[in-house]
Image 1 (tube, each protein chain N blue to C red):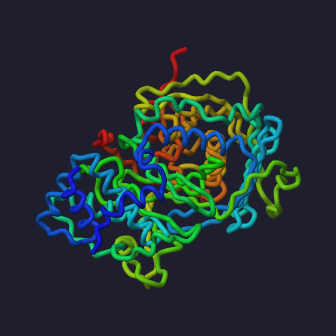
Image 2: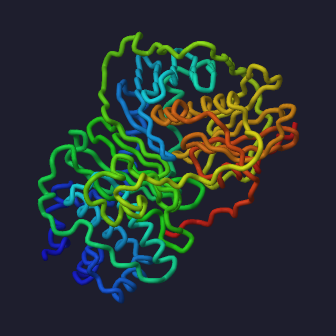
Image 3: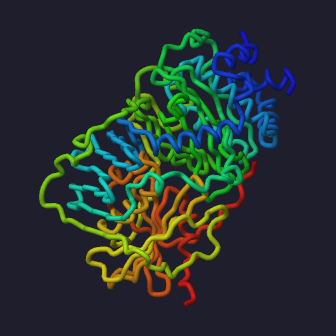
Length: 207
Length: 319
């Protein structure tokens, strides 16, 4: 990887890469695994330097980039989100969280923007600059957090009675981790019926 | 302005060995360590679960003593909601649903039965990468693992793992677009060499609960098979159990790709219950359909397409 590309990545994350170059970089990211990994690392470092308290920024950025690539249009240059401050190198103990995994398993057109994001409840709506990335999931720093919950089920009656569902979740829980079994305790035991719909079989993910 | 790229070597050195970042083998090893640690260690902790706009705090007590597992999970947010595992019985108390469900499965408490298995070809279905290292997370060094599915039949994960204890500090379940479906993070988590019995006793769950007791039927044959399971998913276990108020036994088939797990439950279609459809309960989804006069339901923390494929492939075995 050339220094020029590294400079472009850095400028892209700084929101300072010209549109024309952004277009080319996004196309290159689509086919270059190493480049995507490098971008992910850069973002990680940037977030650490900025003392980010969460990773949703990365998810949102990934969504934005994925969407841009899917549409084959340049992504709007990101506002400078974490550049500038070097004070983050002295991160206080236990504070550093970071942005990770900018990309899920691929950036191909079948991967639309993230719509089911769970915003960080500890972050959304907090005081201070939420940053452009956070705005993707929480429209403003003052608005109540919004959530994209899977489409509400339609129908007239639950598919499974609560006792049956609870029993199934309990039995299934034996084959998950102890922590995942917390879902049995925390999940509202109310089955939601949905209209039968035939999904297409998932296509293999681009690598 | 100083470009970030110029700082890369310094920061990477601070985060850990540059060679380790991006590595798969070390990440898989750490995942295996985590899976083992979370099942075989004794610990007490509190964590939050966030999903669907809800945040819930839970306390977990997990004890392994003489090869026997006991545990208690209590909702701090919803008092009375709890799960206890004592001996071969697991009980979930759901006061808001007016239910207490008890499942008795001989050998259930055995540690051996709970150990992770079948993870040999995880990398066939996931890209597993060590994303980075933090010198301190909750005061301890942590590694960050990214698990990205290679197709749409499984979800991704991102895990922050304590490098000393291999216990997870934080986990995220990611959909196929990379969005967070569920987030778990420990506020506190401590290893305990001795956890007294009284810490594992159920807390007051209120009165007036309807008790449902289910019992495994030993030696019963499943009589069902799944044709064309999603790629990578293998049959791990089959149980048949008797449910109170349900005349015919219920068969549970457990399918896993080594990381994601789904259960398929098959029982004679109860009278009046012929519905087909999908549902959700926390991070788990359900899909139910009628097959050969039976109600077939798949449950798991997997995409709906996976559950549909399992259900649509259910067939009575030729006798």
